[in-house]
View 1 (spheres, rainbow, N blue to C red):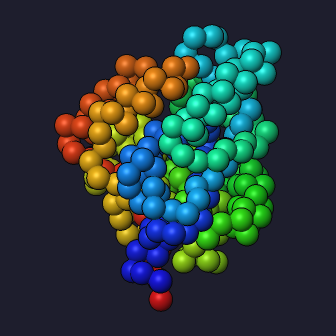
View 2: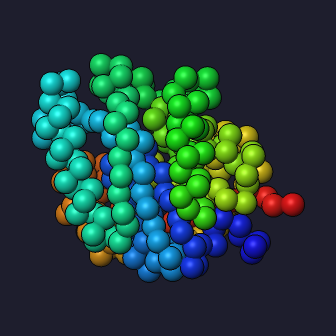
Amino acid sequence: MSATGAGDVAGRAVLVVSPHFDDVPLSLGQSLLDGSLAAASRVDVRVVFGRTNWCLQLHPTRRRARVVTAWRRAEEAVAARRFGYRIRAEPLEEAILRTGTLDAEEFRSGGASGDPLVGAVEALLWQWRTEADVLWMPAGVGRHVDHEIVAAAGARLAAADPSSIAFYEERPYTSWLDLEGIEAQVADLGLDLTAVSVSGAISADTQRSVGRIYRSQIDAEFESGQRFDRDQGRTERVWVPALP
């Protein structure tokens, strides 16, 4: 095992856990195209909250969940072909459907370890762990409650099996934070973690691919984050647990 643990995936099967449709290409698109994930033997993506009613073009009423979910699944299928992964989604409801509110403050819990969904997601992770050599989990950067739920479940798994888990920084949230702010939020996982770059500088071509595919999601805020990443020469990173 290399010093980078689960960050070293050359020739290995990787399962990337995505809170929502779009999180993986947004956060790891460069790695998928020509970085660490491009060297993996296989990349699978599992979307946890696969039932959604959120898009920019339609007011997100509950009755539109079926239509919007189908739309976002179609976008994800295109992204899977473009970025080279296989996709499967669970039918759990995202936060907007669970809460019935669009208030962004309702989605930033500041800690979701006590949410009963954490246990349900943890059970899924133990099942998925048997399907791949390595699991890459969201780190919960941005403090969106859905991301925090999945990150908290991943932290439980990492405590038991640190060599098989890494935590990726989620975009666009990472793009709106300085490096110290990212580190502070990753520290909420309560693990001894080290950041490892898994791509070169994020390119405009990769960002354009994401923008073209996810038309239901990409707005001016996303685009400003993309410009910041380019201007700063940011890379995509994962955080890996310290190994004995």
